[in-house]
Amino acid sequence: MKRAATVILIFAASTLLSAQQQPPAGQTPPAQTGQPAQATAAPQQGKRPAQAKTQAEYDAFNAAMNNRSDAAAMEKAADDFAAKYGDSDLRVLMYRQAMRAYQSSNNGDKTYEMAQKALKLDPDDPDALVGAAEVLAERTRDTDLDKDQRWAEAQKDAQHALDTIDTDITIPAGTPQDKVDAYKRYLRSSAYSILGAIASNQEKYPDAENYYRKADALDPSQPDPVVVLRLAIALDKQNKYPDALKEANRAVDLTQESTTVGTLARRERDRLVQLTGGTAPASKPPASGTPNPNPSSH
Image 1 (cartoon, rainbow, N blue to C red):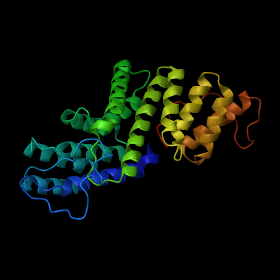
Image 2: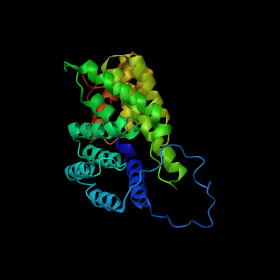
Image 3: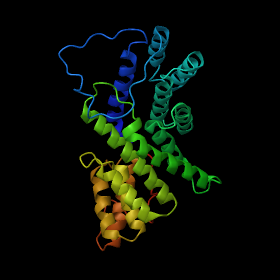
């Protein structure tokens, strides 16, 4: 979700920095003075940051990560690194970074492929689970012959991400707790939104409403307009028009008219205004039907 781009970038950067800063095996870390050992460890949960086993592996990782903004180059660097260091703990970080780079370029097939490579190395990685599930949920159509299998896989991955966020997220040492909490909220919100999208696709609108409400409630200070719009449409599909209009108005307030989600929000708002006995703004003619409940562009 684009609303969480800053959270992702900050946390991803700190993860990469932490991995890069870990001394290779056999190298003594510098002494830390004046800081109690329990200062940052107690409230954080999750896996320890991956470490290089040798200086050569450490240097190769640093060199490979210089490609992290170029998806194709990052993928090649990850493959080359994995071929040379087949037992390295750092491989999953590199494939996860390639996944994010492909996400940024809206390449769903490659995003899914990189997520699968990361999950082959660590099947409990919540970042990769969310990445894979999101591609399947957003890019599976009702006309696809294998839609049920794809939705089932996406549902399984999203649920497993919810189960592993507290135990399997990689938390760099010294990461401020508020950043850890923000990233966990992002992952949970994404997983619930994915489950809501699958339920909507299956026309299970009460379930979709429940999942979207959970996703929306995780960060009231920074609501995701796509989640809010999808909640409005799930309510609309259940003929809960006043509640749907409330959420549609909120989606309108959160978006610009020139964006895809902004256009859909205003179309849904205008439709609901008519259904509830109001009048739509003169400059915005009412839509003939309910918008697609799963807009993928913010």
